[in-house]
Length: 189
Ligand SMILES: O=C(O)CCC(=O)C(=O)O
Ligand SMILES: [Fe+2]
Image (tube, rainbow, N blue to C red):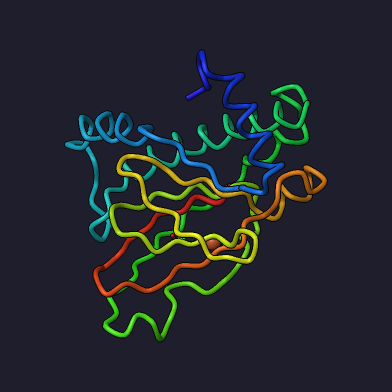
């Protein structure tokens, strides 16, 4: 993803998102292509506690690149050059976190993940089918529906700082579900 023909349009949408205080983005179809590519190479991978090590490493490489492309687009949305160093140095260090939320019969009594902001530039979140993520927008919790084969990208604290508050760190939480388990893989970049 580099925005291709739609690059200008995407940058404009990002500007609008910051003005309207939506700091959650959806990146569709990216995962479908990547999963197919990784699957073709699966045979050579080594299993580590049920997680395929090679596939995980390959996923990290691609998603880190995607995070950097996203930062380029955000730079442009801030009126900077896409390779502006202050933003390009961000996103070089990242960590991958996997969450496993059990189904909960009394889901109204608890949360999967309580209200918080992410201490990162961007959070790139992969989750399938089961919802639960909510973002706080104008004092209301809004459901962020998972997109099959897509990613949810949230602005974190550091991006809020380097953008002088133009992009806002997303206040979010994960509610519990009666169905499950729900899994998510988060890259903090
Ligand atoms: O599991 C999710 O959907 C969100 C996880 C999250 O907010 C986090 O890892 O910081
Ligand atoms: Fe988070």
